[in-house]
Amino acid sequence: MDIIVRENYEEMSEYAAGVIGRFVRNKPYCVLGLATGSTPIGTYRRLIKMHREGLDFSKVVAFNLDEYIGVGINLDVPYEVDQSYARFMHEELFSHINVKKENIHIPDGLTKDPAGFCSWYEEEIKRAGGIDLQLVGIGGDGHWGFNEPGSSLASRTSIQALSPQTLSDNYESFYKKAGVERDKMPHFAITMGIGTILDSKNILMIASGVNKADVVAKCIEGPVTSQITSSAIQLYAGGVTVALDKAAASKLQNLQHYIHIERLKEEYGMG
Ligand code: GLP
Figure (cartoon, rainbow, N blue to C red):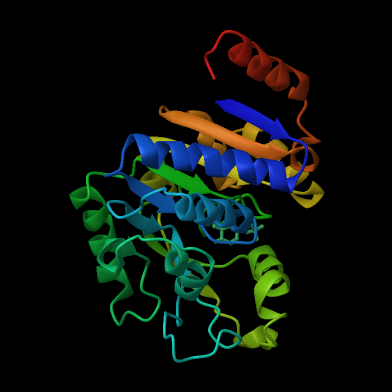
């Protein structure tokens, strides 16, 4: 696991966008797994800038991690009302880069057949050749996507009930600002499973802020447990990079060791 610590959110975002940008440049026909939340916004802004400077997304296939049940993209509905992840992705990234519409996959929160949709989503990922690089954030309760405490670490794309903490965090971050009443917020979501995420060939996890420090430490240094579903990162066999700002890294017991490894890798040209 490469743990990269940067001074602040901006530098962490710069680093994460650099990883994704280099990936797309080296493998134009790649399959990217993408995430929502406030953390990736800085990364997406930088990717948009890179695109304006020539980075080509025209061959990229994208799969998003998750979507709330009961919402979906409808560009006729004003942003304040539509808090779907589909709209988030459209506004924060897709409408600013040249990814083809037909190459974008976001779980359909309006599907009439959620279980059927979940199987189809898994198949679609396989048909695309699997995810080359999956970007993930981390929820306050340690989730990836919406794999809440107690979800199997082998889970596939499925419907999940949101935990009280996720409801509260996501209400504060998004729904409250939009003036949506708390009980009107969706309580269920479609999410790639932990097993689905672990099938990706590379994972890039990002986290920022002191509020994430405890959960980041549990994820990276605590026991592997379904109570912190992102702790499955410790079982992951592919290439994994965790990009943190100093605040999010502040509770890591072995922080000095991770910083030392990064310096060594730089020194020996292994970064
Ligand atoms: C949501 C998403 C997760 C994301 C998490 C953290 O719950 N489903 O994929 O990692 O929010 O969000 P933030 O970056 O706003 O802390």
